[in-house]
Length: 162
Image (cartoon, rainbow, N blue to C red; front, side, top):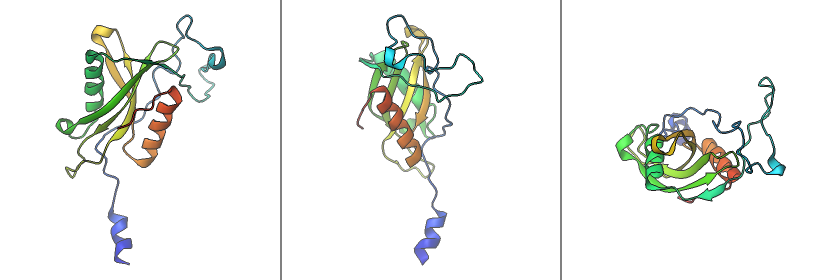
């Protein structure tokens, strides 16, 4: 019985301060020759229509050191304890619209100073290569967020392991 009362006091103390936003690449126009017929035009022509945003399967790309650093800086912005950041594998994919989507893993300390274990993230590199930014779409800090991020990564064709 004492355990029931203790369980009510436990909260999910993640290492991230993150609010989800729609993927910025979801309705970008396709680059010539990159729009597969089976996934043609997932975005509405009328913005008042609201079908689910689509993520198209991508082709693997090798991230150069500058792109990797941009991803690390972009993800670290969302951590509660920035110096505690520890990154695992990251995988880049170029989607049919030309956007480079990155899936990877990050760990950081929560409010109690404890590491929570590796959490998946997904985002997109934006802007010109010499001044790129990484826009985080999601970090899997809770079980639900983790499942959502892993599903998005899987949908685009990424399968990075921690």
